[in-house]
Structure formats: structure tokens, C-alpha cells
Amino acid sequence: MSNYSPIISVMTNAAIKAARRMVRDFGEVEQLQVSQKGPADFVSNADLKAEKTLVYELSNARPTFGFLLEEQGIIDGSDRNNRWIVDPLDGTTNFLHGIPHFAISIAHQKDGSIVAGVVYDPIKDEMFWAERNRGAWMNNRRLRVSSRGDLSHSVLATGIPHYGRGNKEEFLDIAEKLMPQVAGLRRMGAASLDLAYVAAGRYEAYWELDLKAWDIAAGMLLVTEAGGFVTDYAGRDKVLNVGEVLATNDKLQITMQKLIMKSRRAVAAKKAE
Picture 1 (cartoon, rainbow, N blue to C red):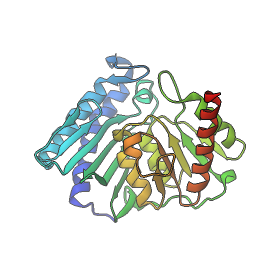
Picture 2: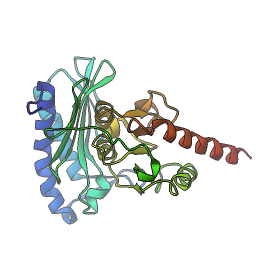
Picture 3: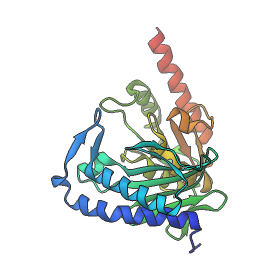
């Protein structure tokens, strides 16, 4: 499919414009002014400039839509049924350390549901996009989740708890159960791209805690439109509410969910002793 729909065109054009300056900033990462907004959670001038560009471009195209933004929070629009969910720079820590793995994530939420999403990796020039009932794509190539159903052939992605974030005990229990069974575990540091890679069949599954809506809204739609599953750890459709995500191909969802929930119960029981 070579032609974007009008809404996808709006989103991709905004992402490309925001990315131009971001890539220039990445080339001068050592000179960026950085402020700290929480434990191991940084915001750079690149975040703020990208978000400003995205708000400008998206507002020009759809002036009545509201926003849920990583940096500015909620901006109400006159149309209460439609809003953009935007992460201007997912993978900020990678960016600030000169690691070329980060993305711009934009989702269109209509009547509470995600109906379109874009995840743009400006370094690799990979534009992942999806629209409800129209499939998932990377540039002009249709995406489909991996067909691997054996953990021994699977590469999984996750987020490792770090300073001020995550549940270390639960993560270690899950990892200990998985490591002897899988072909590899990856921690790349950008949730939107982890989800895009599941959609593209590069990973068989991805799980993580303590996520925000802007981290995952666009990527969730990529996975489901590519034939995969996205739930919270308990298998519910409450990912945006609870901030935990399990995304898999169509073979491993039950296997991964059972393993994760078994670890969660075991860790909870140990703490209760």
C-alpha cells in the first residue's frame, strides 16, 4: 500500500518534520542542555523542541483535537472525542548517551480507542504505521508478526528495572524462568520500537511494567494490526490504564501470560511470608 490515508499522512508528516531537528541535535548530543525531572528520567531540549513541532503540525491539520503529551500533559480540544497521544522522543536516555535507538510515537485516540498509530525511527528512516482494520506497515511493506511458536527459537524484549523504576524481584523471577528456554533476551530502551519490532516479526514477544500511554499507544495498534496480541499481564484489555504490557505473536500469548503470572504470584507469596 503506497498511499497513506489522510490521518496517517498528517501523522507521518508531523513526525518527519520533528525528526529533522532531532537528528541534528543527536549529532551534537554532547552540547545539549539537559535537566533532570526524576530518577533516571531525563528531558532534553530535543524532547521539548520535538514536542513543540508535533503540537504545531498536528494542530494545524486537526485544530479541534486534544492532546496527551509526555512533557505538557493534557491539552483539551473542542472535539472531546478525538485526541493525539504523543511521545516526542521515546528512548531519551539512549539519545543522551549517543545510542542511535529512539523514536517519535504518535497515536490517534477516538472515543477512547486507538485507531491510528505511527512510530518513526529517524536514524534508520523506518516509519512504522497502522490504522484500525487496514493492517500494519513499515514504510510501504506490510507487517506480520513472527510465526515462531517455540520459545527456544524466540527472541524476546523487555525493560529491565533500574534506578527508581520497576519491580526487580518480579523481573528477576520472570527472567530466570525464561533465560534457559529462549534464543535471546533484549533490552533496547524504547518501548515504542519494542512493540514495532514485535509487529515486524523481529521479536516474538515483549513485556514491561511502569509504562505511560504515550510510550505504548501507537505500538499497541501496530502489534494487533500485524496479527499479534497486546494485553496486560493478566490477559485483560487494560494496558493503557495499568501501564503494563505483554505483546506477543499469535503463538506465544498464552505461554508468556502463564509464565509471567506464575512469577507474579510467586513473588507476592514470598513477600507475604
